[in-house]
Image (tube, rainbow, N blue to C red; front, side, top):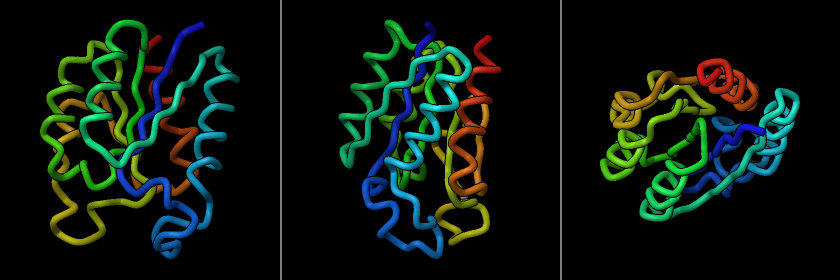
Length: 144
């Protein structure tokens, strides 16, 4: 089986409670379940890590270099200023898909800049929970 890592950044543990008018009512566990189902249907295994700490996400990317073929990452607010995450992802040789429930470009101006996008293979934004299976499919397609 081929492995995919799904990373969830700060505050995503509050999905379903935090600003449901923007992020919806589904929980992170709901999204991870949909992502895992999409990966399994394609014969891939999916590991997931959520952290509110940038360094923990960086460590996960470093560890993924040894045995993960693709990373799907919803970096949350780290999207806009997480340069250490950018650098860690730049050192990853596999596929990277940036994922956001909302479309940052339709929101506040400070959200329009992504430090992850320049090192990502591609981005899935603005499709709500449907973005998780889309991102998994995109990552797998790009890796195979």
